[in-house]
Image 1 (cartoon, rainbow, N blue to C red):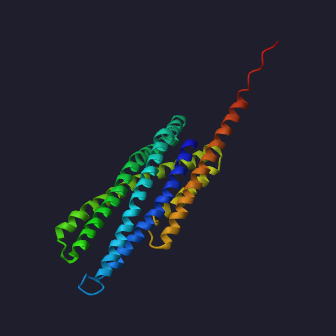
Image 2 (image 1 turned 135 degrees about the horizontal axis):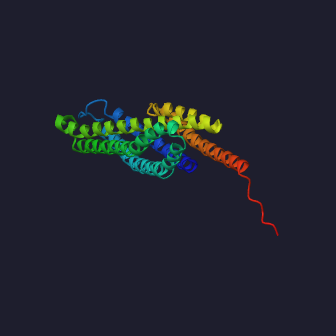
Image 3 (image 1 turned 90 degrees about the vertical axis):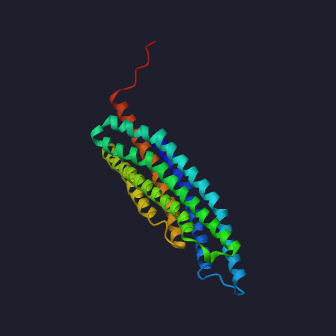
Length: 267
């Protein structure tokens, strides 16, 4: 679990950059919305309005690639941590006390192993759908036909976006179940090992969960929450590393006290 915690903390560092980039994406979309609050007319301001919208779209296109890259990197790190290290750790705990760690192990398995890829597919699909919608909007502005959009054209673009949002929601629900399983394991580990730091990690992760639910807040509030969310996530998994190594040291010292080291051979 200690190696998994290091990778998860690194994933939160990358996730923090994604949150900041996402905030910039939201700001660019807000610029586009504010630019097209009224219909395009033949007034003298029409050319200025078109330039504002096109500038905002260009800003979005510059931001979306780093957002996709950071999300993919975060996903890869988290999934490797889950498959290679966390899965083995909770398997050992299940073998140690199946009555205490068997059920939360299932939650972690279902939640993390399925939740990470599904939520990633959903999030990346949302970004791709937004890119397609804005590209379509850009073409309409270039043709000066923004006021003649057909309903089927709108649904053809919004349908994939709604599907992507549903996929992301399902993935994040699964991740929530996996986190619940991990929290149960942490509290029970604290009882078994008498290492209170496991409980501290669980409490911090609960706070991170709450903050994660409001990271889409608008404006500087959303950016501030995203930064706090990322920092606390890193802190939680660094403390988990410390707790795991402390518990392991206690186990090894207890084994040494029960089984004394072999005597050196007589000469």
